[in-house]
Image 1 (tube, rainbow, N blue to C red):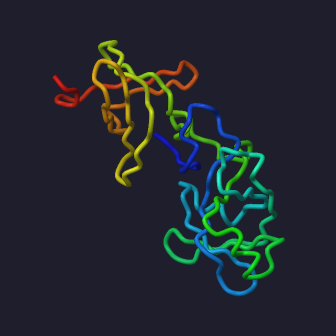
Image 2 (cartoon, rainbow, N blue to C red):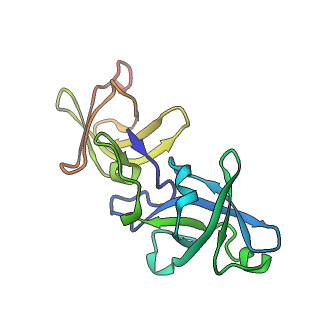
Length: 189
């Protein structure tokens, strides 16, 4: 199973320093509150945040700024309100529009034994249960129902693998390998 305590731009095979929790939508009110769109699978962690990093591109850690969280609360569905200690006015909050709220990878939610973060899937070699190499995972499409792995290789070009039990049999991040049971009709002739 995948966890997207990441979402967003870090779709590279390198290990990111930050995991994306939310994206700032707009200022809320006049005291510097931020209205944010949650992108993590762990929204409940927002209420216990102490330290976050904010920036336009989590792949550029030197451009991220550290902020202490005063409070966070759910506003509606996947939107939350967040207040940072050093953001005290609507003008201050406006600077954060469209930026990402992140945590350091060291502060990520621990995963269950069979779970991986989406960034760990990018770059894995994909083999069928017959031992045929299909290519490497180049992207992950989050559909809502289940993720879909975009696999590119020489033999079949681009193949879309549904990330569901019975198709994705094993993900071994250490070995850099994903084993799949290819459903009938998935591969071109």
